[in-house]
Image 1 (cartoon, rainbow, N blue to C red):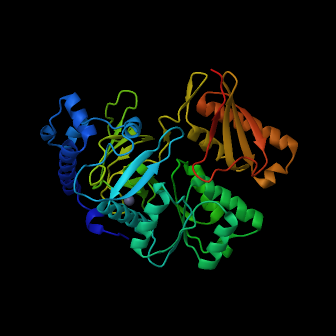
Image 2 (cartoon, protein in one colour; image 1 turned 90 degrees about the vertical axis):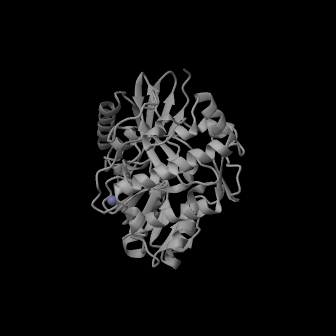
Image 3 (cartoon, helix red, strand yellow; image 1 turned 120 degrees about the vertical axis):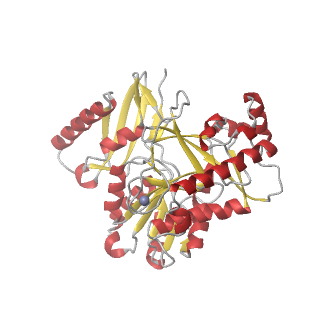
Length: 430
Ligand SMILES: [Zn+2]
């Protein structure tokens, strides 16, 4: 099923011609109306009129997280006639957030992309969406909300947390689709288990739109088994409108990235040099149709690769791999580069392991992984637990080249956050 077959299955030469026209328009507009880019172009000696092909995107400056913060509150907004109608922010752990502005057309286009994603995941106006993301300044919930309304779904703006109320809403209004984070999906599955609710029999859930934190294929499997739903991987970032940037089709072989709105590159995060299709590196995105706040070559810090071979679903837009980490999530432990997702991938292959874990770095360079067990395993025999602990240490050592200490803990004993999961606590005194 397609929301807009004409654009979703546009032949690639036409798609690229559309991208080029929109890139040239974007470069011209920021060159005329955004002081931040005017300064950058001047510093680089770049004449915007000399940008003529899609490959010329490489001559444009990168825009970083730090640039967005430095231009707070409105240094990157187009000083033009378009009316700005909405503000979102992207939270930072310290200091001021990043401020992101939308024109009326931007709000509508973001909803349009969500509508494509929802229909691609098999949703229709007969579905009921329980939106369990955070409403407010964060883009996650509101952008999805508008897109689902466009499709004609009944949207329940539940927000995150309060599992008792989530369950009541699901039962009373027959929710068929949930939108949430992987960590809350797993937490909620535990909650249902404790309540003795069998989601396959007692609820009407069918589909999970799961995103906003990177997660592994193994975690997807766990969520599907526990909730009896089909999980679609959803990718977005507030700097590029929020959710709806890329999403899985029914083939679930990567996420289609909507190339009429985003020009995607993958670069070597160290050198900034572009990498060929299929190679893993940092994704860089240029917005092609944002009006209020276009962004050139945004360094997402998300690690992925890009594939442009045709997809069996008939869509022509490229696919990106599941995000395997963020370039700034990388931990250096005893000289080895470790991504938290590598640890997760190993842990989630053990059926005895529950749904939550925490990596703690202590002392000089000691790595401790606290692992929640499933209920049945926790009540099992001590020798079995000792053996399990040894097996986890060995598998992790083989994957990350560091020998961690493993602490097996009771189900539900590690903290669960309502927003993005905190997987790493770094108390090292280096
Ligand atoms: Zn597809």
